[in-house]
Amino acid sequence: MKWFWLSALVVLLDQATKKLAEAELVLHQPLAVLPSFNLTLMYNRGAAFSFLSNAGGWQRPFFVTLSSIVSLFLIYWLWQIGRDEQQKHNRILQASVSLILGGAVGNLIDRALYGQVTDFIQVYYASYYFPAFNIADSAITVGAGLLILDMFLQSKKHVSE
Image: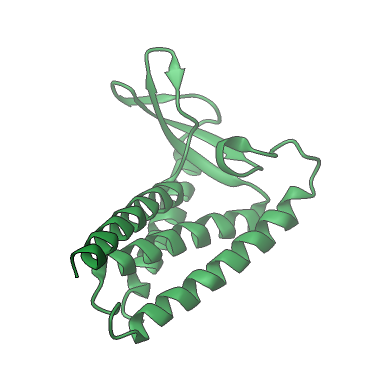
């Protein structure tokens, strides 16, 4: 249970930065921060990369339900890790699941309350723009990367035993 603080921190940072972006930014008008980095307020009714964003409305309950199920699974997984003697000292695994959980809940809140996710971070190179994202998306990405790293480390550990 001690790693739930990281999930809560991600949710708080995500929701606070989304509110700040909505208060300070104008929809679809980039604010240059650094070369190749803008703050740009956008909304996404779909999933990653606006998948299904124009699907006609059925996607909202679908994504809320799916996100809820995934979040419950992640809560259970994190709880199980803490109870497992072999895994409870695995900080990489606990951090990865906590980050993914926090990101999932952060975006779930937006979908459930507003029917869309607020995005505001925009990176680009020349005229190639990566889709806008938010703190929750970043936490999910970092968490997934850590989860992959942990799988490689655990695989090497088992091979050497």
